[in-house]
Length: 116
Length: 117
Image (cartoon, rainbow over all chains, first blue to last red):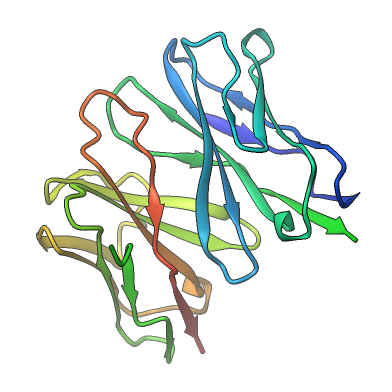
């Protein structure tokens, strides 16, 4: 069964620094997709970045990048030059390809507080 | 593009009453998902439609929950005989046709906060 675990409940950093949020996953599939989403204080959930399991190169979008370590079943999110507005809850998620259900399984989230 | 629209934003029901939640997916998106969010359980998958057909309802509590997608522009989640433990934020999301790709991004609505008294 697929499972996504985020061990960090909350993180506090100073503005303009770099932060890494951890995520480990469990799957029996050889092909899968990993996602990071952000939930703002208003409750809005927004897609940030995706990593395809068959790609060795780490995905990068703006000031978000991923640290994909497939042997460790780990997909860390790195935010560089953090801004106050990056304060939010960050969710890691996984979708398996087998079965084609489309179901996305989420971790419990990591709350990021960016301090001025 | 208005995004995924969910109504109502807030709903308060008494124990034992029925609650119907509505979702309008993004036009052109053929995959619709329902999730439930609570502090304890986080984001729980409930059910998924593709081209209006139910594909996976493995997350749905069997007895009181049902979901339908009568046309491509809306889906409903119905909870009969609501219980206090049903209190949560119910989120609808849509995406382009999943097909065999699996990587299509989910776009979430703002959610319906259900409070069962």
